[in-house]
Amino acid sequence: MINFGRNTWIITAIALMLLTGCSSENSAADSPPPSPASASPATAAGSGSAPANSSTPQPAAPESPAAPAVTPPAGSDSSKDTLVTMIAGMSLEQKIGQMLLAGIDGTQLDSEAKRMIAEDEIGGIILYKDNISSLTSMISLINALKQSNSANKVPLFMSVDQEGGKVSRMPEEYAAIPANSRVGITNQKESAAVMGSLLAREVLSAGFNMNFAPVLDINSNPDNPVIGERSFGNNAELVSRLGIAEMKGIASEGAIPVIKHFPGHGDTSVDSHLELPVVNKSAAGLAKLEWLPFQAAVKEGADAVMVAHILYPQLDPDKPASLSAEIISGLLREQMGFGGVVITDDLTMGAITDHYTLPAAAVDTVLAGSDILLIAHEYSNERKVRAALLESVRSGVIPESRIDESVYRILALKEKYKLTDKPVAVPDLTELNSDIKAWRKTLVK
Image 1 (cartoon, rainbow, N blue to C red):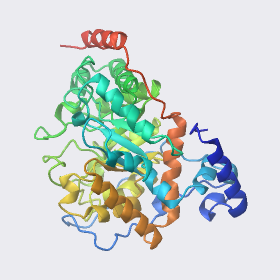
Image 2: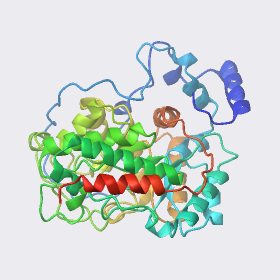
Image 3: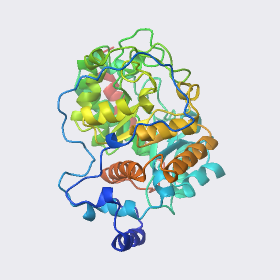
Image 4: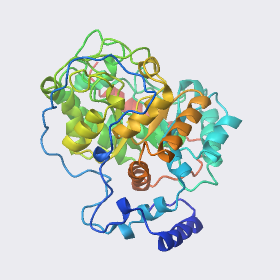
């Protein structure tokens, strides 16, 4: 059970359940909450469109996956499910808040960040390099963000992109961890597992609880401007084996790993931060390469997946993967059997904002099956997304049951990793840095 530190709220929620009962989607005994694949893929009015191409063949069905990691067990009595009870006691505003993961400005807590957390009750925060200037200031900021959530019922995801190599957010007090490509040269999953453990120890020592790693993209295109050394290598077997080892290493320490960038960012030639990449491969071609690491990670119990802003015309000619019901609900959830949390890449990237309004993109991605919407920049963007989702539920464009599905998965993940908003002390990094340096010496030059 999640220790939210709010026993009185849980009692209130149980009382509400007894008085009103759960919604029909969540109250039927012997049945888990419905899959997002059942949600309508319709686009909200006012949505822009990405470039269109030819009609889409059905993706080839991958092998049968293992049971999803965080969906309710089949045959369970959902009327006695604690998370269902909790969701029944949440307002629509609170539920929408859990689906938002936002960036902030600066290295100190400001009034707008405090408002997003205390009033909008957003589910998580992401920090970037610009938010981190030193070890002590980073700890102070993270503790202040958590303190701002003290009146709310659910702890925050405190997230960061700490991959190693050039995508490293931790301050200089931490010993450097090299890029995945350096580990890939060793061809040793043990090295990748240690890397995952060290990355998790880094982020946990600072008060983070979620790491957007490992990268499971295959570096198959030498002209790719955004992946390169971030990948373990250029073949699916290597990336799968080492990526899963890193994923398990992160999770073993108690940090949440997020595999990325589904369905595969390795064969792109443009940076999705700036424009929309297009990968004109068939489903059969993608199933032989790009999808393999993600499919393998799902079988091994992946908790969370980040979906990329890439257009695959032969899968969905109109929408990038991050907004596509065919790719999120159809491929990832139905065919690969993923039952965990789906997180969008940053919705303020050029790949989205050049083709969609932010409110329309937010509605589309929720209808497609996403659980968490990453809004990395500008407080006004978080407000726009929140308002659009609230209005879409109230007007019937998005069924509230679709929101409940996502909130269930989010709360289940927070419960699984026993998240809290407990502050952390400034860590002594002597042992951790010594372990990082010793591990680096084991890598092939």
